Structure formats: structure tokens, C-alpha cells
Length: 99
Image 1 (cartoon, one colour):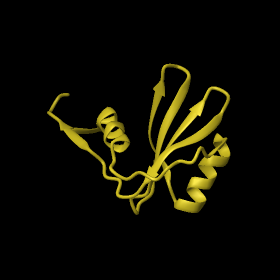
Image 2: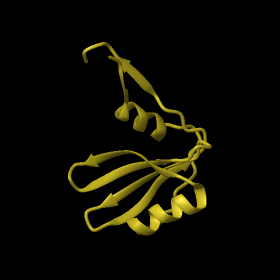
Image 3: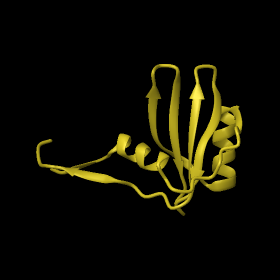
């Protein structure tokens, strides 16, 4: 049986090293507001999540058209856009049978 996983560290590393990401311009708000705004304005939905040293959570929001936003949320629920751009692609690796 084959399973597929998203290579999250490689994904984030690739996104952060994108040649021309849009400047975030220090845009911050409550997480619920940010999630609603990303869904309403850009049709972006949460796709990946990771924890940063227990002090924040980073999420990647992606639309079907390939737009993406990286959002960091602190322990108080305040979220800030880290970066955003176009042309998102998944980096998927297939695991061997029995993995």
C-alpha cells in the first residue's frame, strides 16, 4: 500500500526562498479575521501547519488557482502575513509499501 506525504520542511523552505514573494507589509489581525479574509478574497484554505518553538504556529493557505499565503499566529491568537505569492505546487513523495 502506498501513502503520500507532503514534505513540509522542504515545502516551507522552497516557499521562503521564492524569487519574488509579495511583501507582507506587516499585515496583522486576529486569526479568525485573517482566515476569513483569505477565504473570502483569495479562496485560500489551510493546507499545511507547523509549530515554531512553542511560541507560534505557521500555516500555509493555498487556493486552487495556486495563490498562497504564509501566516504566523502567536499564542495570543494574533496572526501576521509572513509572505504571499502565486504558482504554489505540492512537493509530494510516495513511500514504499508497508511504510
